[in-house]
Image (cartoon, rainbow, N blue to C red):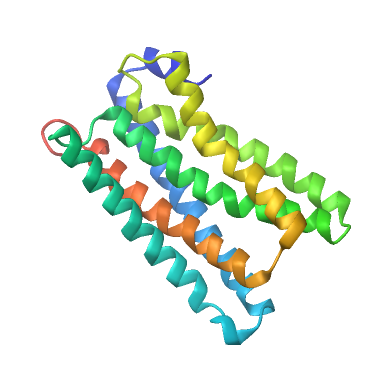
Length: 202
């Protein structure tokens, strides 16, 4: 839904929106690290404790770097706009997996009010995540199918996470997945930052 509006704005505003995206993603990454570390503290230390969060973050960063390299190798050129949008959607999807876990676990322990509040809160900030996905590809042609697939990639993991959280929640698993989300977001920030520069490199 953001795409038609983003296409009408000046290139300077696109750079602003990309910078806004980087800030938003940085906030989500830090939030995921803090949430994961807090959850790791409630789980058994024998499974790694807070180290699980960092293990998930480093692992996700390396895996996404590998996916990026593989995609570049297939196309034989540097990453394009939809390539960047795909990586943003993938990173946000991995982060949303952790959010889904939080929702599912709230319902699992019988805290319906907390679960409902989390659903509303996450839905509101996921609206801005949609902007983050389409901003890199604002000037490219897009099909409804491509946009729907990107939305599914970013959003569906929240549903999967809620199912896992409601049926088999464990603090250590949740901590690991929050770390995965943070690492994925860090890799996406690395992808987007070059697009914030102007053509002369500023």
